[in-house]
Length: 150
Image 1: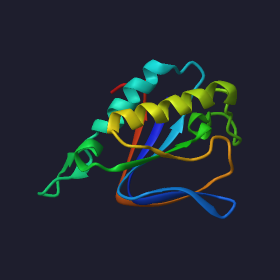
Image 2: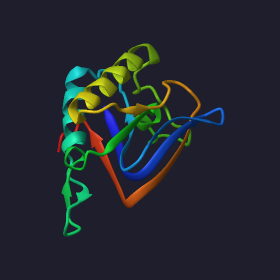
Image 3: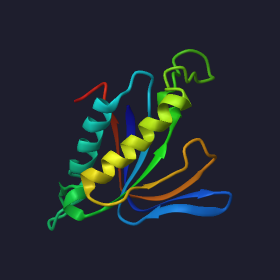
Image 4: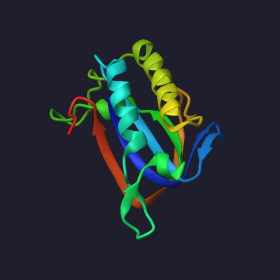
């Protein structure tokens, strides 16, 4: 399971010119669910996201977590995070979980992250054509991969 984690001032999801989700300060999480991902990947990733200390403290140092700041989270499913681009110029998405497996894991991920941070998680619509707007604060963007737990 892969997540592109972006610290944001604001973020929103628009579908058919209608904003369906939006948050203030917190994280936009683009979530890629791969073939073979399971609930252990969810538990690890949600714990990391909730406790990742990349918000500034009183001295301006990245030392506070989403839990510390009571920030918000917006989670958007993004199968393209599993793109294979080594060969040729057209990405392959064979490593991404098929929708019938990915959607329940996406829903479980959102519920688990909500439990971790103690508040509802905003979300995109699984499989929809979405437009994402954000103000990346910093900018701070991190790549997390449950298969490469560094």
